Image (cartoon, rainbow, N blue to C red; front, top):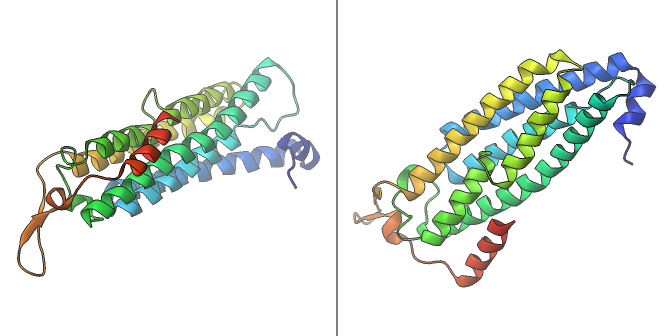
Length: 235
């Protein structure tokens, strides 16, 4: 059963509702930093992407916290509520599409190279150009870079937060911290792209003693997989 926050908070009292929303904002900030910082130091491609999902759940929780618990009406309250709820729902959708594409390209990279450690990759852009472009678009969207999907939803979340500040100044510090988390997101996504697709191919000594690299082992992906990349890229 789904209950509107506008029904729940007046029933439990404004004070409890405000405390609950502040706590939700704090949890959102902690989740965003926890996921982003672990992604920043992770070398396993799947681990990095998975922890970035934890970071983005922080954005969703933060967006949900931007719901005025006060029963007062007014244009500022209405705009803040409408913007925050719209932004949060949109971020659920935009993150799902962008992260789905990122996991898909990661699966293609691992399948073609046989590697999961991004430090053992490098120089794959020349071998897998379509995958490189798709990965870059997905990564930049997850990082909140314009003009991609997650940028739009994150921008609306921060816009809602700026409107809420007129009602509750508590949100000033959490909003600033979420902006810092966004910068960290850009850092680990740029690291992801740089280590996999740019630079010189890393060599790896196999059990047989022959040296090979992920770039040398990689080969083109099928057109059907490229089609799935393209559909998610467009979205």
